[in-house]
Every structure is written in structure tokens, then in C-alpha cells.
Length: 336
Image (cartoon, rainbow, N blue to C red):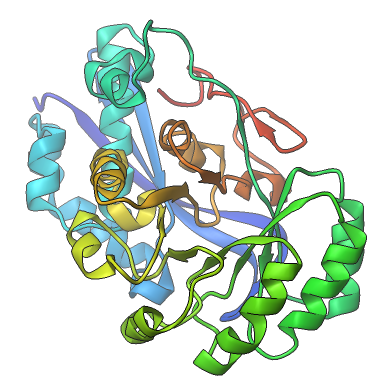
């Protein structure tokens, strides 16, 4: 009999329509890994991303390739060494963290590796965090109307796409004068957009610009002024990417589906800080199960983008609790 039992399945979840520079979605697919050992069940969720050449079938197949290793006691360290980064490793890694906590009879933040990363003085529950609330790409009028409805939120993240972005920001700032603003172009800008928009965005109070240029053509950032800090998203997947990003970006956006799980995300956050980067924690479309592990990275992040469950029509049986833009720690029934 194997030490563990591994189960893999996929799910489809419906969400409010949301547009970025690359297109619009109103649903998404996730892969869920379930591990059972000594009477305990643990879970991890990941969202395969087409932009990174991932699919449900490819993700499930990769996990299946490691079934015997996982069921016979594969450790998180071995997983990092043997499975490539991405959604498949994320689902397994997060399930292993959940399992480790349950086998130890502790919450995940009481485990030594997390405890040390958080710099906690006691084994107390991590604090609540404030997430951005994201506005998808639309006309200036519609984005302004959405901003008005959410003007009470502390920080808004504005998805942009290139032409017309200044008009979008003007409407949003008019209707949400007190909210902090960060923007995300999802690789949709040209250098001309950057040069034209950045001085105006500075006047409008924008605090950060996320991934203005394609990841394979971002070297120009070294030649441009940065009156507003610039954040690497598509350009930064794991620790190996950091050296190239020095001098190009001031922030990096950590996403567990990019790092391949919480283990590498912890390593990336610490290494990024050591190199002088500030960190942001982000997410793909996800349920509360996919967001829960990222909550731990949020404890040290400067900007937190963990709003995905707010757009779901339904969520997990024990979802993360949100009060406006405030996110509470995950319950033990959900994860960790």
C-alpha cells in the first residue's frame, strides 16, 4: 500500500466577466489535488494558464507522471527538484503543505519554515490583509462607473491595454478620489504609451505600474525614467529570474501558479527582498482554496492582489472571509 493516496480532478468555476489586454473571461478551470494519509485529507488548487502554454490535460498528466513518487512519500524539497515550475507543481506543493500541517496537528503558519518567514514572535494567527480590487478593461465611462461603485475601497487595481488608457484613468480618479491606484497593462504598452502616460499617471496618484511591456521585450525599462515604481509580473516566475530584473523593475509580483507553489514563493519573496525589490502577491482566477496559501506571502508583501474570490458566483464550502477589501486568514476547514 502506498504511504499516501493521490486524487486529481478538474473543476470549472463561473465568475463575473473580466477583461484584460489579452481578452475576456467569464469562467475558468482549476486542477485540484487531494492527498490522503493517516486519515487526514489535504488539498491544493492551481489554475493552468494558456499564456504560459498550460492546459488542464497537460497539468493533470504531469501530476500523474509523478503519482508513484507522491504516493510513496515525496517531500516538498524533492518536488521542487524534480517537477518543473507551474500549475501542476503548485497544486501538489500546496496540498503537501496542507497535509504537513494536518499531520502535525498545527496550523500551517505554526510550521517552522512559515513561522520563520513571517518573523512571528508567537504562534499567533497571521493578521488580516487589505487586497486591491481590480477593474477590468472597458470604456472610460464604464470603468468610471465601476470605480464610483467601489470608491470606498482603499486601493484599486486598474487593468489597462494601451490606447485610451489616460482617459480611463481620468474617469476613474474623478469617481474614486480617495482610493489608492495601481495599474496593470499586462504587456499591452509600447514605449510611446509609457512616455506619454507615466507623467500624467504620476499626477493622478498612481503608485505602481505592473508589466507595461512584453516579458521578452522589457529591456527598454533600463533606459526609461521610473517616477512610478514598475512591477514585473509576466517577467518574473521564480528565483532564477531575479538577477535579470535588477535595474528594470522595483517590484516583483509573486503568483503561486508561476512559482510552482508556496515553497518557491517563500524563497522568491526572501530572495527578492535581499536584492532590493519590493514584493506584491498576486493571483490568477481562483477559488478561496487557490488563494489561501498566498495569504501567507501577503504578510510580507507591499501590495496585495488576492481579490479573485470576490468575482465568483459560488465559492468553496468554507471560503475565505472578506469584509470589503479586508481578507481574513483561511479556516482550517479550507486549507492549512
